[in-house]
Length: 256
View 1 (cartoon, rainbow, N blue to C red):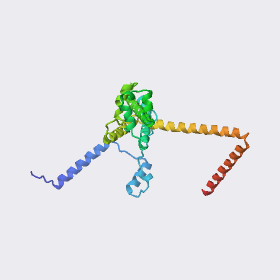
View 2 (view 1 turned 60 degrees about the vertical axis):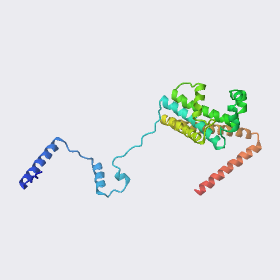
View 3 (view 1 turned 90 degrees about the horizontal axis):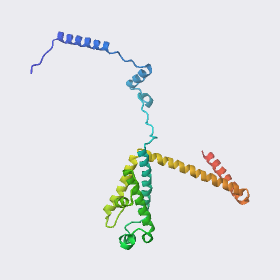
View 4 (view 1 turned 180 degrees about the horizontal axis):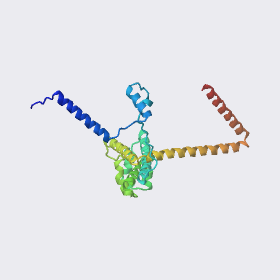
């Protein structure tokens, strides 16, 4: 492929033509000027002498505000997730205590035809821990199904789905561990579908509990004060307790 070699005169003509085009374009597009404050910050940044975060931060970002309003589906998922979390904690506590729903006594009840039918004899034959475990799995399953279907769930549908989360006769250790993980996964999915409503509901419940506890404490204090009016011994104990609190507060102030 032949190579074209430009003469010095041709190079100067090309430079002049390019300059003319740039000047013409500049006339069509107005120049952009910076404010003095912004220009100073840019100059400081470009000089390399800036070493503080405030100098380097030309464009700032604001942390998005937490979501405070939720739609009906999110609120329902949040409430179901709280219920499932409660039941799951019950199952974990029972299992960590050494209980297994596959124990001989309870499995014998479930496998004996004239005992396994729901009723008084069935409940009397089952261990207390098994009944608690069984109810926790039932409530966990019902909450999950309610969120999926959005309707009232029948007893038969609950019984059909309970083995997805509860060990049954014949399950090996691998199946038992898989069901534990399935419970965790289903709960995690429910929490995610609430889109923050789960966490907000927990916060509201915690605040409500503090208010209730404070209210009960105030009631107890008023009752004690009323009793102390006619009970010199109690009045003396309250006085000693108050003086002890004052001494503890003064000691803490001295340390600080």
